[in-house]
Length: 491
Image 1 (spheres, rainbow, N blue to C red):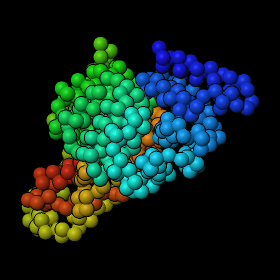
Image 2: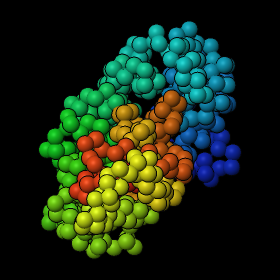
Image 3: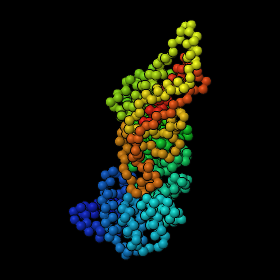
Image 4: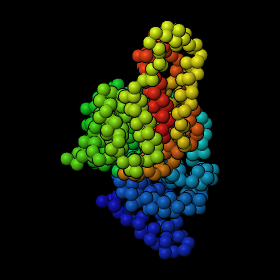
């Protein structure tokens, strides 16, 4: 009831400030700590899924910024106002305002040290921020500031000290349960646990996030970390556990998650996981299947394109409606159809005269250089995927594509996935730390050219002059080609 009253006051102030040109009433009516508290309550509603509160957040940030820029040293003699200044900065506030206001404040040395570290963090100087904040225990601070500081320190230490980072994120959740701080702490814990290879922690954090914050406007970042973690931890997370977590989602979000997992698993060659995820995406829930979804049909086919049921797969691929696929998925469809065709094609056997011993000798004695040149020419005929960048580095001397070695890398939202999990840029401390910037919202340069895969060496024990061995070598070359196309497809 009290929280609703404070939010009601904030709404009233917004209406009055909109009607009054100077907005001076807002500046005089509330102290900085009162404005910041109203901001936090609005952000907590946003974390719970109230997207209509986003405009109110923007307005409160604007009002708080004006109030703090006008604040003098006397205002900051009230400890709550100084803490509010720092919380404002970590809640999406203006770093310039924070730095200018802190320079006017007269407070205790520990509070000034916290301010210095936070300003370094906000200005993109993580090493300096870590060094300044290292001796400060968030649990020894008032809960309103300690929760944010634990979140910041956990974010800063995520790469170099992941175990310490997870402990700090737990502190943040303990100090501020049910808030946007807890939402951000859980969201980051998912990615760090995957990086650590801690499947139990990954599953627990994912379950807690889905239970409480699935409708947060920042849930798309959780989805990225979740899909990436499922791929990297596929040997440690059972399909039953995966199904338990996704069963808490609404049917549309569950379908999108399984489609993304199926696609990533197919690209990484995880046949069993890809088959499971695509089957779950097709199966749907409550009798509402997705058998007609062309993406589900495509991804399920990718995992069986070289199986004994190749004719069934080819028939399934032919029925897929290309018009309903994205450009990148159409490239995958083309690759799958090409390989399926090569698998069932009769191998080209050099004609050998019935009694032509010299011809047989000539075929057997063909220089290895000529065979390798022919293979390189076939690989050169493979068209690049325009506007794509390989998800995995090519292994030197191999036609295969290496699996990712960095489990921390987060999957980008699939360009063909429905926008059922809205994306939003979280406020400063609630967004990935400056050191994590390359992974934020995954807006990477995916228009780089695709480097052709290296030509594989002839398989040991196979004789190119033998018709059967030649057919096996040809099939392996075709599989290498689809690996190249799959690995080069945009996420």
